[in-house]
Image (cartoon, rainbow, N blue to C red; front, side, top):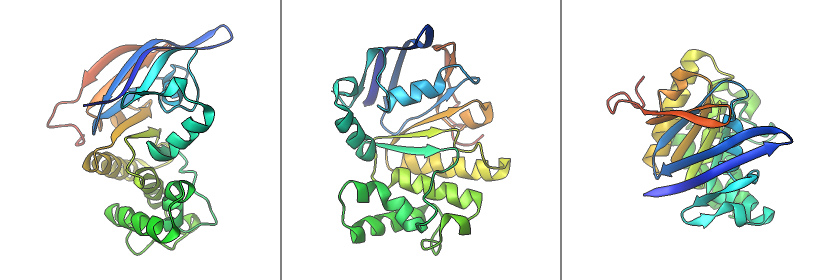
Length: 231
Protein backbone atom coordinates (compact mmCIF):
# COMPACT_ATOMS: atom_id res chain seq x y z
CA UNK A 1 0.00 0.00 0.00
CA UNK A 2 1.31 3.46 -0.93
CA UNK A 3 1.69 5.61 2.18
CA UNK A 4 3.46 8.74 0.86
CA UNK A 5 3.14 10.12 -2.66
CA UNK A 6 4.84 13.19 -4.09
CA UNK A 7 4.19 14.50 -7.58
CA UNK A 8 5.96 17.18 -9.61
CA UNK A 9 7.95 18.65 -6.74
CA UNK A 10 9.67 21.91 -7.63
CA UNK A 11 11.59 24.00 -5.08
CA UNK A 12 13.26 27.25 -6.04
CA UNK A 13 15.41 29.62 -4.02
CA UNK A 14 15.76 32.76 -6.08
CA UNK A 15 17.20 31.60 -9.40
CA UNK A 16 18.32 28.24 -7.95
CA UNK A 17 16.13 25.23 -8.68
CA UNK A 18 16.81 22.85 -5.77
CA UNK A 19 14.11 20.39 -6.91
CA UNK A 20 13.12 20.10 -10.54
CA UNK A 21 9.99 17.99 -11.03
CA UNK A 22 10.56 15.10 -8.59
CA UNK A 23 8.09 12.22 -8.19
CA UNK A 24 8.38 9.84 -5.21
CA UNK A 25 6.16 7.03 -3.92
CA UNK A 26 6.74 5.17 -0.64
CA UNK A 27 5.03 1.97 0.42
CA UNK A 28 4.28 1.08 4.03
CA UNK A 29 7.27 -0.67 5.59
CA UNK A 30 9.56 0.09 2.65
CA UNK A 31 13.09 1.49 3.08
CA UNK A 32 14.33 3.98 0.49
CA UNK A 33 17.71 5.69 0.26
CA UNK A 34 17.97 9.14 -1.32
CA UNK A 35 21.58 9.33 -2.44
CA UNK A 36 23.56 12.14 -4.01
CA UNK A 37 26.51 14.49 -3.58
CA UNK A 38 26.39 17.70 -1.56
CA UNK A 39 24.10 20.21 -3.25
CA UNK A 40 22.18 17.62 -5.25
CA UNK A 41 18.83 18.41 -3.62
CA UNK A 42 18.51 15.33 -1.41
CA UNK A 43 18.09 17.17 1.90
CA UNK A 44 15.66 19.63 0.31
CA UNK A 45 13.65 16.63 -0.88
CA UNK A 46 13.56 15.23 2.67
CA UNK A 47 12.38 18.58 4.05
CA UNK A 48 9.58 18.79 1.47
CA UNK A 49 8.45 15.17 1.93
CA UNK A 50 8.39 15.65 5.72
CA UNK A 51 6.34 18.84 5.52
CA UNK A 52 9.11 20.96 7.03
CA UNK A 53 8.91 23.32 4.04
CA UNK A 54 6.32 23.77 1.31
CA UNK A 55 7.46 23.19 -2.27
CA UNK A 56 7.21 25.99 -4.81
CA UNK A 57 4.89 23.68 -6.73
CA UNK A 58 3.80 20.06 -6.67
CA UNK A 59 2.02 17.96 -4.06
CA UNK A 60 2.82 15.60 -1.17
CA UNK A 61 0.17 13.24 0.19
CA UNK A 62 0.37 11.09 3.32
CA UNK A 63 -2.21 8.30 3.24
CA UNK A 64 -4.40 10.42 0.96
CA UNK A 65 -4.09 13.68 2.94
CA UNK A 66 -2.25 16.50 1.17
CA UNK A 67 0.49 18.07 3.27
CA UNK A 68 1.00 21.05 0.99
CA UNK A 69 -2.54 22.32 1.73
CA UNK A 70 -2.14 22.09 5.53
CA UNK A 71 -1.55 25.06 7.83
CA UNK A 72 1.85 25.38 9.50
CA UNK A 73 0.30 24.34 12.82
CA UNK A 74 -1.25 21.19 11.34
CA UNK A 75 2.01 20.21 9.64
CA UNK A 76 3.86 20.71 12.93
CA UNK A 77 1.39 18.40 14.64
CA UNK A 78 1.79 15.83 11.87
CA UNK A 79 5.56 15.83 12.30
CA UNK A 80 5.01 14.78 15.93
CA UNK A 81 2.62 11.96 15.09
CA UNK A 82 2.86 10.73 11.50
CA UNK A 83 6.61 11.20 11.06
CA UNK A 84 9.75 10.32 12.98
CA UNK A 85 13.20 11.87 12.51
CA UNK A 86 16.80 10.73 13.00
CA UNK A 87 19.56 13.30 12.45
CA UNK A 88 23.31 12.94 12.04
CA UNK A 89 24.07 14.43 15.45
CA UNK A 90 21.14 12.81 17.27
CA UNK A 91 19.97 16.17 18.67
CA UNK A 92 19.18 14.71 22.09
CA UNK A 93 18.51 16.99 25.06
CA UNK A 94 21.57 16.77 27.29
CA UNK A 95 19.67 17.29 30.56
CA UNK A 96 17.17 14.46 29.98
CA UNK A 97 17.76 10.72 30.49
CA UNK A 98 17.42 8.33 27.57
CA UNK A 99 13.85 7.30 28.36
CA UNK A 100 12.63 10.91 28.45
CA UNK A 101 14.50 11.83 25.28
CA UNK A 102 12.86 8.86 23.55
CA UNK A 103 9.42 9.72 24.97
CA UNK A 104 9.48 13.38 23.83
CA UNK A 105 7.20 13.01 20.76
CA UNK A 106 4.54 11.36 22.92
CA UNK A 107 4.88 13.91 25.71
CA UNK A 108 4.65 16.81 23.25
CA UNK A 109 1.57 15.16 21.78
CA UNK A 110 -0.17 15.18 25.16
CA UNK A 111 0.44 11.63 26.42
CA UNK A 112 0.79 11.19 30.17
CA UNK A 113 4.34 10.72 31.44
CA UNK A 114 3.82 7.17 32.77
CA UNK A 115 2.50 5.74 29.49
CA UNK A 116 4.99 7.71 27.37
CA UNK A 117 8.03 6.53 29.33
CA UNK A 118 6.70 2.95 29.42
CA UNK A 119 6.47 2.94 25.62
CA UNK A 120 9.93 4.56 25.39
CA UNK A 121 11.42 1.86 27.61
CA UNK A 122 9.87 -0.80 25.40
CA UNK A 123 11.46 0.65 22.26
CA UNK A 124 14.83 1.25 23.98
CA UNK A 125 14.90 -2.39 25.11
CA UNK A 126 14.21 -3.53 21.54
CA UNK A 127 17.23 -1.48 20.45
CA UNK A 128 19.52 -3.09 23.03
CA UNK A 129 19.46 -0.32 25.64
CA UNK A 130 17.70 -2.08 28.51
CA UNK A 131 19.30 -0.93 31.75
CA UNK A 132 20.50 2.37 30.27
CA UNK A 133 17.15 4.19 30.35
CA UNK A 134 18.18 6.67 33.07
CA UNK A 135 21.53 7.61 31.52
CA UNK A 136 21.89 11.05 30.00
CA UNK A 137 23.39 11.52 26.51
CA UNK A 138 26.79 12.45 27.96
CA UNK A 139 26.90 9.08 29.71
CA UNK A 140 26.31 7.12 26.48
CA UNK A 141 28.62 6.16 23.62
CA UNK A 142 27.97 7.67 20.19
CA UNK A 143 26.28 4.51 18.99
CA UNK A 144 24.12 4.26 22.10
CA UNK A 145 23.06 7.90 21.79
CA UNK A 146 22.07 7.36 18.17
CA UNK A 147 19.98 4.37 19.24
CA UNK A 148 18.13 6.67 21.64
CA UNK A 149 17.50 8.99 18.67
CA UNK A 150 16.13 6.01 16.72
CA UNK A 151 13.88 5.12 19.68
CA UNK A 152 12.58 8.70 19.71
CA UNK A 153 11.80 8.44 15.98
CA UNK A 154 9.93 5.15 16.39
CA UNK A 155 8.18 5.66 19.72
CA UNK A 156 4.99 7.11 18.24
CA UNK A 157 4.68 4.33 15.63
CA UNK A 158 4.99 6.84 12.77
CA UNK A 159 3.98 6.07 9.23
CA UNK A 160 7.30 7.39 7.87
CA UNK A 161 10.74 7.78 9.48
CA UNK A 162 13.19 10.24 7.90
CA UNK A 163 16.90 9.76 8.62
CA UNK A 164 19.37 12.44 7.44
CA UNK A 165 22.93 11.01 7.30
CA UNK A 166 22.15 8.95 10.43
CA UNK A 167 25.65 7.44 10.68
CA UNK A 168 27.68 10.46 9.58
CA UNK A 169 29.10 11.08 13.06
CA UNK A 170 29.90 7.41 13.80
CA UNK A 171 32.80 5.12 12.98
CA UNK A 172 32.16 2.49 10.31
CA UNK A 173 31.54 -0.48 12.61
CA UNK A 174 29.16 1.46 14.88
CA UNK A 175 27.45 2.93 11.84
CA UNK A 176 26.74 -0.54 10.43
CA UNK A 177 25.28 -1.60 13.78
CA UNK A 178 23.05 1.48 13.90
CA UNK A 179 21.85 0.95 10.32
CA UNK A 180 20.94 -2.65 11.08
CA UNK A 181 18.89 -1.54 14.08
CA UNK A 182 17.25 1.36 12.25
CA UNK A 183 16.19 -0.58 9.16
CA UNK A 184 15.16 -3.65 11.13
CA UNK A 185 13.12 -1.77 13.72
CA UNK A 186 11.32 0.38 11.14
CA UNK A 187 10.46 -2.69 9.08
CA UNK A 188 9.26 -4.59 12.15
CA UNK A 189 6.66 -1.97 13.03
CA UNK A 190 5.64 -1.22 9.44
CA UNK A 191 7.07 2.29 9.19
CA UNK A 192 8.38 3.44 5.81
CA UNK A 193 11.98 4.65 6.07
CA UNK A 194 13.72 7.36 4.02
CA UNK A 195 17.50 7.58 4.48
CA UNK A 196 19.33 10.58 2.99
CA UNK A 197 23.00 9.84 2.35
CA UNK A 198 25.97 10.48 0.11
CA UNK A 199 27.40 7.02 0.92
CA UNK A 200 26.60 3.97 -1.26
CA UNK A 201 27.49 1.75 1.71
CA UNK A 202 24.63 3.30 3.69
CA UNK A 203 22.23 3.17 0.73
CA UNK A 204 22.78 -0.60 0.39
CA UNK A 205 20.88 -1.12 3.63
CA UNK A 206 17.70 0.06 1.91
CA UNK A 207 15.47 -1.87 -0.46
CA UNK A 208 15.39 0.91 -3.04
CA UNK A 209 17.70 3.81 -3.91
CA UNK A 210 16.88 7.08 -5.63
CA UNK A 211 19.98 8.74 -7.06
CA UNK A 212 19.53 12.53 -7.06
CA UNK A 213 21.54 15.09 -8.99
CA UNK A 214 20.78 18.73 -9.80
CA UNK A 215 17.36 18.46 -8.19
CA UNK A 216 16.23 15.47 -10.25
CA UNK A 217 15.96 11.73 -9.67
CA UNK A 218 18.38 10.51 -12.34
CA UNK A 219 18.36 6.81 -11.48
CA UNK A 220 16.34 4.37 -9.39
CA UNK A 221 17.40 0.86 -8.50
CA UNK A 222 16.51 -1.89 -6.06
CA UNK A 223 18.84 -3.91 -3.83
CA UNK A 224 18.80 -7.67 -4.43
CA UNK A 225 16.18 -9.24 -2.16
CA UNK A 226 18.81 -11.38 -0.42
CA UNK A 227 21.06 -8.37 0.18
CA UNK A 228 18.60 -5.72 1.39
CA UNK A 229 19.53 -4.94 4.95
CA UNK A 230 22.56 -7.26 4.71
CA UNK A 231 25.39 -5.44 2.88
